[in-house]
Structures are given as structure tokens and as C-alpha cells.
Length: 142
Image 1 (cartoon, rainbow, N blue to C red):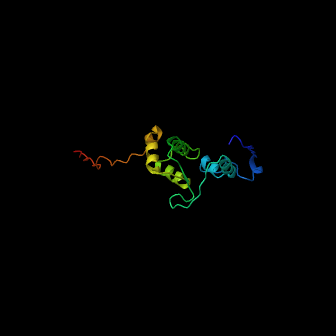
Image 2 (image 1 turned 180 degrees about the vertical axis):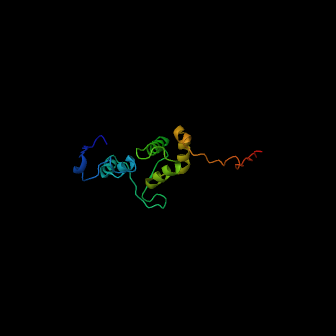
Image 3 (image 1 turned 45 degrees about the vertical axis):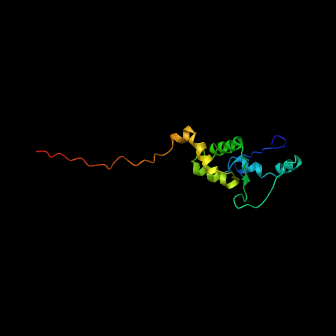
């Protein structure tokens, strides 16, 4: 991205007729990067093959290679997004599933979140209460 000339223009208040990046929800910055035409052109110039084919599991999604570092970065970005900090594994999986695919993605998402201390601390308890409450006998006064 550093090779591109970018300009960020911010207009205060009512002068801002187009929503700026701070006022609209976007999924994740990696999704935005993948949709750039310029990136595709650079990949072609670098002679990096980009294959587009129909696959029932991959339709409209990027196939992430078996690179643990890349997958961890994607999980970390979705996990600590500014719009939803520390979402559960189901939410992270659903967000990732819209744009990416790799084998065992659901399991890797659950494994990644099991290592997050904050997520483990705020997890709702799913145990049944010990037993039913029994009313106490009211003593009779003489």
C-alpha cells in the first residue's frame, strides 16, 4: 500500500455529504485490500498467478494458503476489529467465511479464541445450577 498515493479528506459536520471511514461500518481492512484493482495489476506485473475458477466452497471467497502466520494475522484482525472487540468464535467464523476459505477454518478459529484470556474471562457460564431452591420452614410463634 505504501507504493500508492493516498489522500484522506475529512469534512466536518454537515459538509460531509459522503460517509467517511469513521462513520460507516466496514468489515475488515484486508477485505478492502483484496478488492483493489491496482493490487491485481501489481500481482500480474510481478508474474504472480491469480486463478479465478468456480468452486462450490470457494465461490466469491479467497482461498488462504496453509501459512499459519497469515491465518493467525487474519484471525487477529477479525478478533480485535474496532467495531467488535472480542466477539465469540461463531461471529468471527461467520465474518471470515464471507471472504475467506481454508480447510479446518472453524476449528482453527475456536483454537485461536481458546488462547485469548479476555474471551475466556467474559465467557458466560453454561453450567446448570447445583439444585433447586427449597423454601425454608417458617417457625410458628407461640
